[in-house]
Image 1 (cartoon, rainbow, N blue to C red):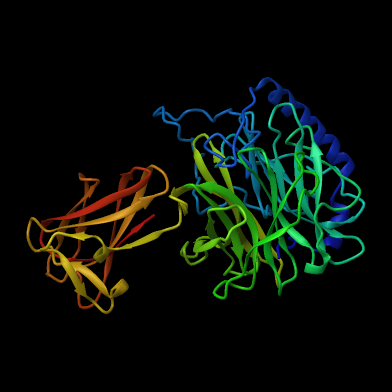
Image 2: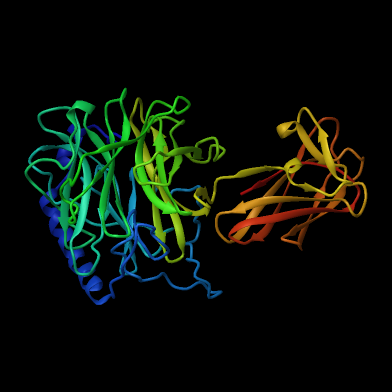
Length: 494
């Protein structure tokens, strides 16, 4: 379950809803004026570049300024890193959309707002908290302090109605349910729909983590997670054309596997590589083993075949703790993964989670996140004969390649880059020849740089790092002897 970042009893005096709504209304007026003069854009459930948020329709095509090289790549602000928070404070369960050239992020309630809102000129920032509260008030059935995991769906045409889905606790029980709200601006304030929640399966412990998906033909769906720990699973329900009512029965599309921690939650659905790709989180949000995983299906209702972890504390080498609650943002510069990570522990389940943004690539339907180091074993590459696999018990995978004893010795290792750009290649090697050796490093057949293998002793392994330019997708990194000899264990792409 994704719970609030603070004691709900302490939130009540900190949420000045009336004043916040007034300030948000001023922001909404400014944004509405910008939206009304911007040309509307359509979209599809595939969410190609130019789409926004978790749903393709409704994106306005305003783009960030072009890069100095004239490419469509967005300009990152100084200090940006995919492994560093873009919002260094409480902003859990983030979702992002783009409207008229401005990016809007929405998060779980914190000390400042029932639904905090932040804006930025590009996906990677700089992000700035919007004044006031994005949610004007809670509906009559909901208790304060438990408003989680917002999802905002833009209208298909501008001006139009923005729809918000959110989780909140029932006043007359402990269960979370999913409510709806609408606004004329992405900044809000969103006004809740009364008359009861949209989704509230009390027999399954309630529901949290709403996520919207819109098919190419305009059919709307909502994904969510049922909240009872023993039966926690991800469900899909078709919605009415306005997205405000169920239009069919809910269907269980995925449960927890035996090798996944505790439970599954936080769904996000996109269509990539001709498949439906379901990103989801596994584990307790307040523990280090919280992680992002994915599953793939040919039909929106499944069956979904699980593909394993996309993000985890271990995959990041500890640089991001407990990454999860991922949201795919489709932008005209490509795809991004918006997610949260643990910034600090405050005891028990009380943690502060900040917002992160990383570029996202696709190997068919397999998601690959920029900033997550990926290891490629050298012995699995193409070896030209005078370089061969050598059994080494203390090597990664139990083997290395070498010895690079002649000038024609070469190894070629395929690597996948989620986006085009500069990457660090960290090479683990051993050189027991007694003197330094040199290897040429090439990319896709062209010499890129050289790496020096310093002499090592005994069973020691050492590392050397080089920077190369890679194209988006699969590339081949070649290693060719220039001088001396050595053994290469693996290449790690960062």
